[in-house]
Amino acid sequence: MRKIFFTWALALSAVVSVSSCNNASSGDQPETTATEQEGAAQDSTAAGTQTQQLAYICPMECEGSASMEPGKCPVCGMDLEKNPKYQASADTTATR
Image (cartoon, rainbow, N blue to C red; front, side):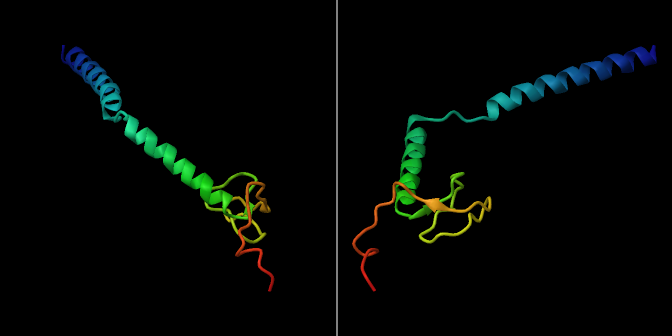
């Protein structure tokens, strides 16, 4: 009788444990609001504008790898390529 009781108690605790884990994971995730989505869009636009200001970019588009000078990407190690969106300003084209 004792074995049956412990078996049922163990099974019941396992079911309660599993069901509580499933409910907690869905409730813990916050919903994104429209203002958060707009902020994320502005951040990506700002990053795109910043990349346009740099002459060399990584072909894998690694974050933080763009540079004004040729070289290697510090993230993936690939050679940086000329940025087709880069527009040199009057200051950078001045002769020395």
